[in-house]
Length: 328
Image (cartoon, rainbow, N blue to C red; front, top):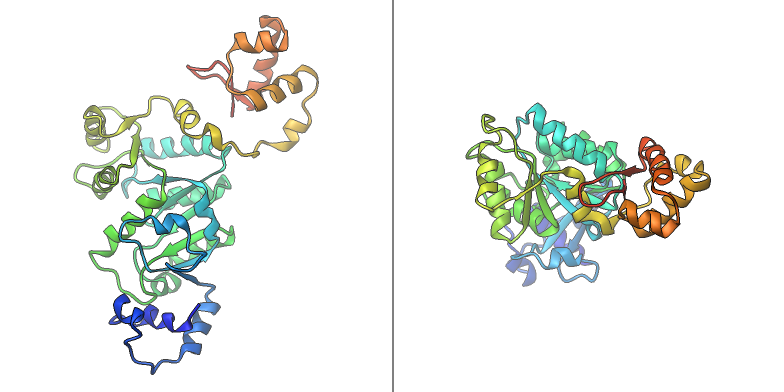
């Protein structure tokens, strides 16, 4: 990779077109720039490099340079975009906490933009549940490395996850950096989850942006007197947003193929007899109804229900409205 491209990273006046034609001053200390990037463990990719991730390549008006810290391969995962208000209610926080209780069993990643409240809560819950998380910055790495936000970056990087930006290392934020950042997140994510949003909020603008890119948006409704749910309910009623009526059903329908072996291993290792038989069968053939389980395992339904109750108490199975018993 040509080190001269690092000039673009620090000079606000150099455009991509000038870089491609090598029309810029050569009076730069390239080694100094490289040393600063290496010292801060920042990596960079150019769009024509073979290791430029395919999810970045398909972005409309794709970035020419991406700067990142740590593991770019996380982009290979199924990615959930979490968005919401800066002042999240107790209801919204409870929704996210409940959602992450279920997401921790799956081989997925979350993505947000390292802002206050919902965004930082997304990253914090991801770290707590050991779910890879991606923070997409809306301005320069230099700012984040000098600000209190660096602690949030460090927490993500310490877990070997991903912080990413397309903006020059010293670029100051501007109005256009926010929609540019949103476009990257929208293209990288598989769907958007919205716990709540205020009227005329940035969250709803983001939802409109995502819908314009044909991204599916899911949301949980709230009572009609809640200011953070009024417009979410309106979008649901207009069929713009898909309604989540049950978080278990939502997670299963979207993530059942992304099951990771994140079960509490000690509990599974201690299973014996019919408990182990039933769990092992469901692990390979889930979800199932009680009738199919009874027939497949040649067990009486009353005996089966008794053992399943024990597995439920061990937090290994749950009962849903569509399928009687499913893996957590």
